[in-house]
Image 1 (cartoon, rainbow, N blue to C red):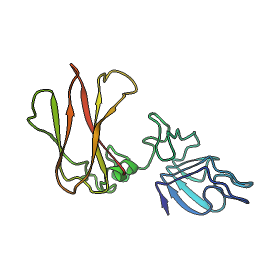
Image 2 (cartoon, one colour):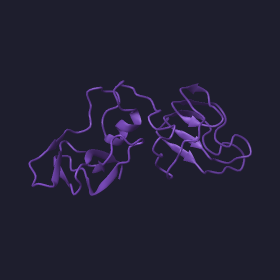
Image 3 (tube, rainbow, N blue to C red):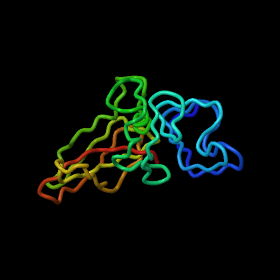
Image 4 (cartoon, one colour):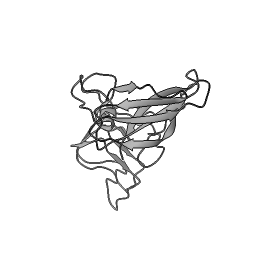
Length: 185
């Protein structure tokens, strides 16, 4: 089983430039080349995936995935939030993978974030129970009424330590909204 994968810009001399057998869950199979079955062919099953032509399986889409880069989706892309959600919480299984939580456990959450008493003009965010294989950051927005929301990273990001650590942001604007985020290294 292939889970949370991107097959793109591959070329095959005969068939199946992207995928040719097995099961693909929460995957993107797009922009591949082959004389037969450019993106996929053969006995294959997809679930919660983006591929063209429409593959067999449940909850698949054929829309352009909206890739911002070879590994990231653009804001508002049709694949964002379209993956499966095994524990029926507010995060898809892919988002839980990024956050290093357990996608089959509805009680597995992103680490708690606490604000500390920092000097005026500084916001300090304490991240508890961080994961060593993830990078954490603070993002700011000055207008929550703007759609879509534009969140800007306030450097530096920090790699998780398997313990608590602090992220700091300087608030040099009259009003600013903050959120924390996590990504793969």
